[in-house]
Image (cartoon, rainbow, N blue to C red; front, top):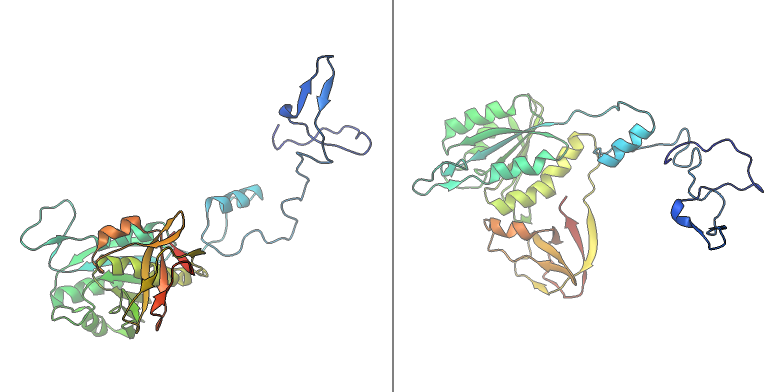
Length: 308
């Protein structure tokens, strides 16, 4: 029986092993032939997996295999950090909830469902705070409500320099201290980051383009969430050859390019800008072109940041 203790029988010549049924055969003369066995084959010795005093798990987001390790040690409970509450909000008068009819120049809100789904399997409790139109007072009221009782507010849209981009001004009025507004990266240059001391809530304002939201969630939001949960964030990366040469002209920002994994290496997923959401369906990860890098050659090994 798998996992059962061995019977207390005398050992033959100091050896003991378990023989699986497929490891022996009956010969014509009726004699049983055993395959070559080594001492302790098919036997798990006591203390073989871990010894008393060993560290079973370091701080991490618990996975199914981690739960198995805890259960195997007889632990029915474990001390864990509280998952941060995360408010998710979209801004834009043009936005319509999926499933509702469009009217005029309206479009469906894809950013909020994307963020909620993106964060649902991570170390947080995402909470849907709906959409807010491009109106200053409405923006002020929605942001004030979203800050309360949360450790992080993630919103999309309204953070650029347009006439109806009210979010930065409203956040400052509510007492949010601006830490930075603008990042030297593409996509995602207008990103806002701040902290509301009164509520203890961090704020990340993302540009409204879907690809920007997706990339910045991986690059900025997830590492912050890990820190809030008391974890070290380590993106999963692999080093693979580039299938085709990449060239670019704008060198003043780090650029995150979506890629897919192919038989011969990494291939760039072509997309027509930050709003080209359909391209995300083929994306397995990203590569980063650092500031000042104009070209990566075909065959060159690149670090691929995989999407988990």
